[in-house]
Image (cartoon, rainbow, N blue to C red; front, side, top):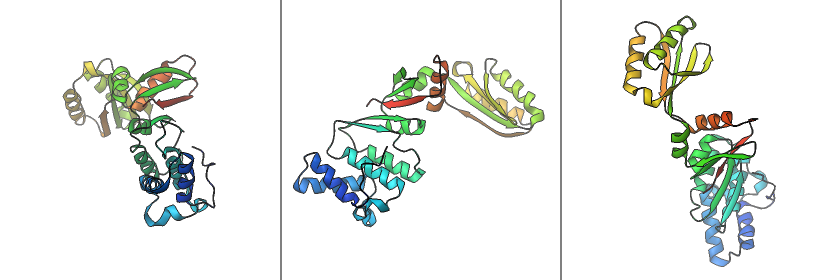
Length: 244
């Protein structure tokens, strides 16, 4: 999101007063909405809202820009990569501000799967400008993620033992990543029980050194990659849209 709509000499409060008037807010209602907007984007405490925007950090400017876009309860707001470049705390504050928009439809494009899952009610995955799928996060995980992700790290001389271990409890496991003693496998959910995996790993520990291992459900990141790879002429240019 660009911060070019900010004037460095105006305070955060003055920005919101200006844009609130443009959206036909007046009098005590305008002042009340401005106060709420500053609180929603964490620019109220410590008199931050009364400081010139030119003294704001990048994250503060980003949050002020979001407050400006949401003031006056617009019906539709478009946001492009709103949290890019923000530190984790600023990113979370920005995400929290979106949760107050009950009457506003937000169309959001982002490459952050964490952001998409946190904010979006419905997701559309695009590849090369074409919509490949649409649904809520749980639905997409169920549709494209019918597998667990098994990860194990061991010494290089025991990598073959690791392969045999996985083949033993799931013959149809698919290796998707391998580097320096760490391998990641996709395991079809219908072919294995979680308890069976735990039992197999515990037995394997008595035969060779296991530095680390894990079993995880499909993530939205996995869905994103799977859909992108399966699309024809994939060039790595993908985005996610919130169709709230």
